[in-house]
Picture 1 (cartoon, helix red, strand yellow):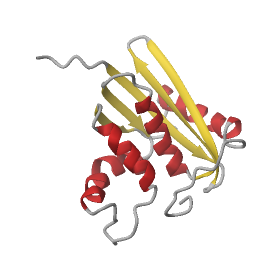
Picture 2 (tube, one colour; picture 1 turned 90 degrees about the vertical axis):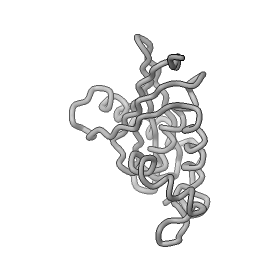
Picture 3 (cartoon, helix red, strand yellow; picture 1 turned 30 degrees about the vertical axis):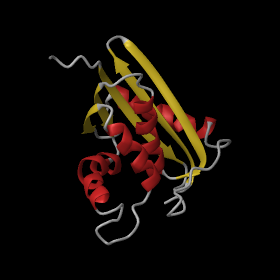
Length: 162
């Protein structure tokens, strides 16, 4: 039987003023002629947490299992998913140095979503002229100003916002 999953292209980005500091995240979901923009933020967070939040929010916004191509300019997110996550899970959420995985709460939340969708993770160079990447960058920066000043803090429970 042919896979009937809808195809969705997602672009995500996170931004922070200071690291840690107020932050914002954004996602753009594209399916056929349909477009949806999402954004949010936190008063005290890190850029890496905002990158993860963007991917989580985008995948949670999908109403049914999809075939997703997700573009990110974050090597932390792309490498975390494609290289590090399987090792962290096998090692009980410990790094190679036996320390706690930073942002473990978000990695675990993202890991659950991986089982729902078929996702191809693609890294794209930031600020290189890709109009969709530029759009989510703009939205994430706006989210710092819109949400980042008033939203609750988003702290890594084990590493205190690292």
